[in-house]
Each structure stands twice: as structure tokens, then as C-alpha cells.
Amino acid sequence: METLFFLIVAAIAVICSLMVVTNKNPINSALSLIMTFFCLATLYVMLEAPFMAAIQVIVYAGAIMVLIVFVIMLLNIKSEAGRRTSHALFMGISVGLLLLVQTWYLLVKSSLSSVRGTVDSAMISKVGHTELIGKSLFTDFLLPFEITSILLLVAIVGAVVLSKKKL
Amino acid sequence: MAGAYLPIILLLAIAVCFGLGSLVFSSLIGQKKLSAVKLQPYECGCEPVGSAQERFSIKFYLIAMLFILFDIECVFLYPWAVLFKRLGVFGIMEMGAFMLILFVGYIYIWKKGALEWE
Image 1 (cartoon, rainbow over the protein chains, first blue to last red):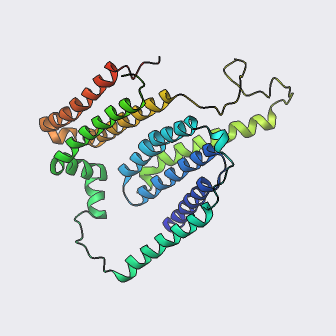
Image 2: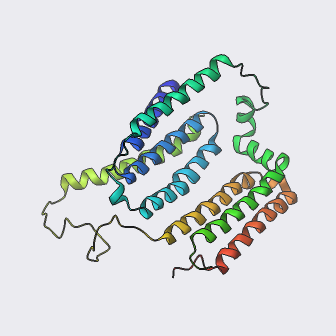
Image 3: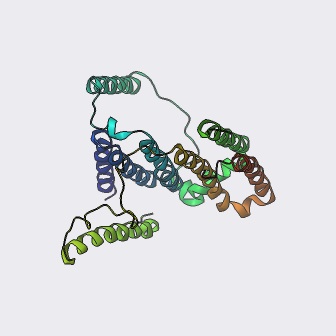
């Protein structure tokens, strides 16, 4: 049952990702990308990470997609749509094959060894996924959390400086 | 496990059924008296002028950027709200420091007039 559900969601994700690349109209590509993000959120739920799924929907399918659609609106898509670059297919396939070979080499030739973490399925179902993330975020990783606010502040200032004509 | 997600699945199912149902039923039982005016793109009662695919102002992009940044701020509030009682006063202080730094950014964009639509 769970395998069947996974296969359906994975198939929709792959089909939507293909539609992102093959659609001529950038807005249609953006809409397919939203569907892909929702499929990824479903996969996060199946991996017992509901908080990640919620973030995937809130940040990616919500905020980032608004930004992507606005970028499409900013560019003059009438002149760009339908135009094809000459070596796009060749370059795409060769880069894809290169990545595939790299991944295969890494998986076959190298020994991936690491220490197993303490968080497993039993612990997640007992404590809760959001609680686990929150507890490590607000106790062990307090400094990185506070630094995130400075990173966001820099991003706010950067956005205003770059896009405002007269400050 | 699956039972906890039943409300979300139901919500998605109702949303999809409502959207598809509105389209299918209106095309099945609605009247079709088409005219040139009716087939125009609907634009809030105004006469549509020009193409929809023009360049939009950079002002939209700035608003979208600021939306993402404050959206990410909100994301950090969810696990904090879940753990609010367990973290106690310390939790309020660390989230206060986080919010204070971002409030400086909010004051900055306000004073620079980035929220105004000139």
C-alpha cells in the first residue's frame, strides 16, 4: 500500500519535472514546478518529516514560486518564448550523463561510512518531529539560529539596495 | 500514521473536487450564448488594454523578496511555538533577540520607503 502510494507520487513528481523543462510557456513551467514541490512535500511526509513538508509548501510552493513568477513577469517573455538555443539538448544530456557517472562512481568505488545518528523512527513517533527540530534548534544550535536573523537582515538590506532606484 | 494525515488528504480532495466540479458543472448545465464581448479576458469590469505579457515593474519583485524573508522568519516561529512552554523564559529571550534583529530590518525598509508604492 505504502509502496504503491510512493510510486504514484514519485511518478507524478517525475512527470511534472519533465513538464517544467519541456513547456514552452514559462508560466506553465512554474505551475508544474509547484506540483513538483507538493509531491516532494508528500515524500517528506512519508519519510516521517512533517515539519519539512510544511516548510516545503510554505516556503517553496508559496514564497519562492511567487518570486519565480514575478521574475518571469519582469523578463520580457514574449521575445524569449519559443526561441531555442542551439546546443541546449546536447549540453543538457552531456551534463546529465556526467552527473550520473559521478554519482555511480561515488556509490560504487568509495566506501560511504558514517556514524549512525540517534534519531530514528521510534524516537520521532515518541517525541515528535517538530519538537526534535525545535529542541536542537533552540538549545544546541542557538548561535546559528541567531546568526540566521543577521543573514535575513543582510538579505533585507540587499534587496532594498539593489531594487530601489533612489535610496 | 496515515490517520493523522486524513484531514489534510480530505482537504486536498475537497479542494480538487471543488475546482474541477465548478468547471465541469458550469460547462455541462450552463447556457452557452457566446459573443465577442463575453469571450474577452475578464479584467475587473475594465476594458482590457494590450497584451497580458508585458514587462512588469521591479516593485513587484521587491515586495516578493521581502515576503520571502519575513516568511522564513515565520517558519522559525512554528517549532518555537510547539516548544513554547518547555523553553520558558529562555525561549522568549532567544526569540526576542531574533525578532529584534529582524525588526531593525523592518524599520530599515519602512524608513527607506520600500513599502510605499510611488
